[in-house]
Image (cartoon, rainbow, N blue to C red; front, side, top):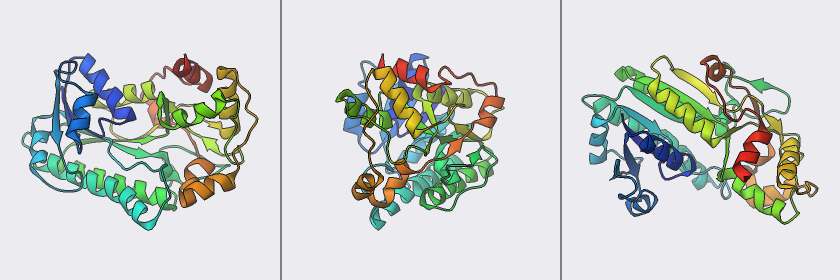
Length: 306
C-alpha cells in the first residue's frame, strides 16, 4: 500500500510509520516541519518514506499527493493537555482538528484516483466525563468543550463518505507507551513521589500504543471495518488503580496525591483532561475480532517499563 499520514512525527504516528515501513509499504509523511521529519525518518533508514510539506488548515499543492495513495491516516491536532486553555488556545485546538480534517477530505474528494479509506482520529472526550456512567460507540456525545471539538472533528471526516470513500473513526483513549501521558507520570515515581492525581476516582480509559497501531493497521487493510470504533483497552481503571499499579510495576510507593487545585492552577480549564475521565468500552472494536496484546493495565505497564 501507499499511505499518507498526518501527525506522522508524533508519538503514535512515528510508530505507525515504522510499522508500515517494516512491512514494505510506502508512506507519504505530510508535515509542517520537513527538517524535523527528515531527522525522525532519515532517508537511509526509511527509503520508502516521502516527506511532503503541508499547511494543515489551507488548501494547496500538497493536496495532489493524495491521488497516488491507497489510504490516508489523519492523526494531526494540537496537543490538548499542554498549557492553559486560553480562548486563543481553544480555537487552535478546534481549528487544528476541524479545518485540518476539512482540508484532508477536500484533497481526497478531488483526488483521481481516490484513496479507498480514510482513518480519522477522534477521542473519547466525545462522550463527556462521568464517574458513574460507562460509554460505548453507541453512546450519546457530551456537551463540554472537548466533546464539542470531537463532534466538529468527526463531522468533517464524515463528509468523505460523499466521495464514496470508506471512513473509519477511531476514538482514542489515553495512549500508553514510551512517551505521551505515561512519560509525564513516571519521573515522580522514580523519585518516590508518585501518587494519584486529583480524587483518584476519575476513570482512566487507556490503550497500549502497540494495540492502537495494530488497530490502525487493521482498519487500513480490512474493508469490512467501517464507522466509529473506540480505541481503548477492554479494561479501563480508575486513576487510583493506575497509580497503584504503576507503583507496583516500578517497585515504588504510590503515596503522594497531586491535589486538584495544583493541576487547576497550572492548566486552568485544561485540568479537565486529568481531573475528570470517562469509562469507555470498545464494544464494536471487540466485535471485529481484534485481539489485544495488552488487554490489562499491569501487562501493558510491565512491557513499557521493561
